[in-house]
Image (cartoon, rainbow, N blue to C red; front, side):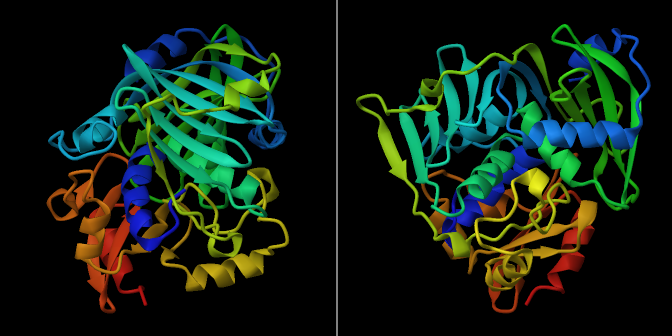
Length: 385
């Protein structure tokens, strides 16, 4: 969504919180274990990947719980309710409406007196906050539309949208990951398998990811992310009602209401957008199941773009660290000036699922994030250019 070095700093601070990010919800689900035919992990993964890659029509209401250990921030600054409101809105319990179809994706956080929505199509990305009458708009570059849509949605909604949570979790499957079917569960009145995904390394903060896969449609009905050694989920999302009926195209149309403050983000050309890993939950390349590379761009070309990009990925899999060149602390402070966020007062930060810090190296300031402890971020600094 944000492609310039300044805006990347803002995006990583927000996306890191959302990206890797209900004991009560899970306890309720665990009491219902329907009898289902046995299935191997490989077969369940293959069917889920095919179902997700088909970009199906699915909609419903999702119950979300988020506990990322984010610090309390004073509600100051301009923009969508101030920085405190932004960070505060990431935590706690939410009721979210979700719509998926080949025409686009819409995710709406239903508030007592309004809503916050993300609406993405192959042409436009909108972030809408009715409480502050603020809309953020970005055009999706031609030639990179499908990949850009998946990247933006993955970063912004993987903690609240079962389909995006499944995309990110399934992208982590490699020899460093243990995969098994741990049971069955009933979600939104539908029988589902529980597909459990565990890192084989103890060097990541993530302990386990559970996905609830519809036993007949093979689509994810929910999931949960557990910190290492934790008995309850730091992030959980599951449908309370779900429909596979056709979705009207106008659900993805958005026109800012009169009086809306519209912030338009600059659009980078397709060649400037690398497909990089994020905290071990996305691959360094771009496999077909995740939307593939932008049109006409090979994986080798994507890796060459990454080497010239201000975004670096150090390591791979669950222990990958993402580093963003923010040029200097003053550049980052200027980028965040309207939010009231002071990066030096907030960082370093370590939550149950991810860590973030600033580091000086090679004459520039880097913002590093990953699903790893602070010590791993410190070690990654030595590998920066």
